[in-house]
Image 1: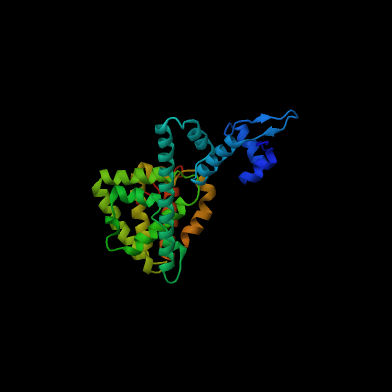
Image 2: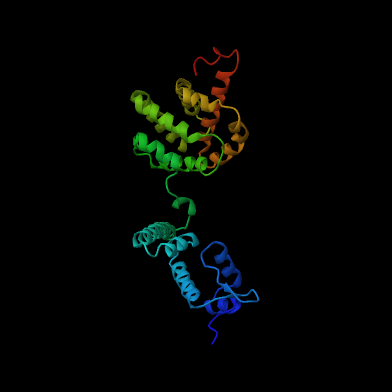
Length: 277
């Protein structure tokens, strides 16, 4: 009795397509069978057992490359164990990622009303700054902390071409090395937070802008960033539009005045014009 199977029979019996079988031959996962006098592939019990192993290992999540390694090293249990341990590690990482996603979704579902913007993690730039300086600048200022989180989020979620993260890191490290100036910055933070609840045209806006501009001009990395041309200039209008939604009218005016004073101070021949800035 002929125990050989043609490729179509082999495919039907193993539950895969002829195309898949041919691919397995091509990548060396399944040995080429002997051929009939007419040139047809003839598969036997050994090929069925081989395919059974392939399908089982594939059901565990192994890639074709890993399966090839496993089958090729069946005489070396250590190599087989290494492949399985590597796969186990990958699956555990995937499980952890999925569990974290489920937790984030559940946290969103627990909020009423549901708001996806309030379920975000701290933006990377916010983490960089607070890892270096802590959260002292937000002492008793929860509104300002949330506002800064959102602002950093706008910067981090898009590729503005500003290379802002290294700049904020440098500024944070500068303040870490200059605690007296950092205390001044904290004072400005409190004054900026107060603008949240003040009218746009109060004199405090202009005074704070002049005070802050003076500090910005004394810190080279900040001065260079705010006067930088290139991508920042082309994106500035839309950045300002997005950030204005996160600021009160008085705070938005403060930001515009700061940029104005910096631009004026950098203009040729204006070195003495804004000496009070």
